[in-house]
Length: 327
Image (cartoon, rainbow, N blue to C red; front, top):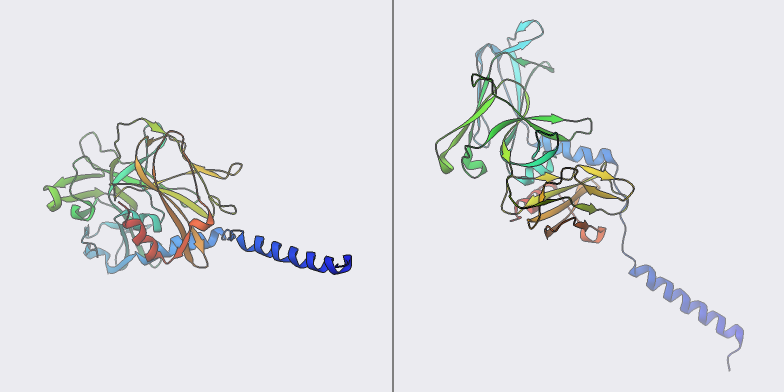
């Protein structure tokens, strides 16, 4: 018979094995990233997509982008604080087509409605235009023209209008529709041709972000949904987007976060019940993206959740490819 002193070490050893086994079964946790690191990923995505060109301000510009868009700035159109600008100037141009590029750069298609709410848009292309001289921004003194092949976004759509990007203090963008003057002048977009051969022609007078858009239309009843993300993540160091199946040029974003519940949501209640879509959680991890994608069919007042175990890490291109591969 074993004595008490012989049994105690055996029990202690067994307990050690038990506790070690429990430790191994616990899911791994990942600390949330620094918000600035997440911001830098998005800024790097913008910089990687920025095309540049130098030209003489007095000569004007005819610039053909990598995607096939053509920007025209008339001679003598640019002004500085002293009047008409002359000499060497530099163009910065960004073009975004498809939800993968929109997500990586944090440029979702959320439009401001007549009531001030946000609702998803279908995009015919997002564009950033700026001209500087010696690091100082210039101002256009006349309308500029941008021609965009509609084949880049699935074909011409006569319902498209022009929208201006409004960026808030957190760096998030919302699109505000540009209104034509009473005589039909001012910033506007029109379509020439049909189908994949159609061209969008955009007349605009301000630098910054511009978008060819229309509101996403779905007659089904609408609802509000919520998304729970892992502990340590919030609106400062992560984001949640919605990719609507069959709409490769639409990317919605959940624009509210409740720190008490840990839920991302949206205050506009514009998600169609029965819609098939993919919910996307994205953040930063050691200079790469950490993300998860979940396919759902929307039901009224749905709550979706992500765990760290459902996420994967990858490069920006990995993320873009994963988003563009969605139905």
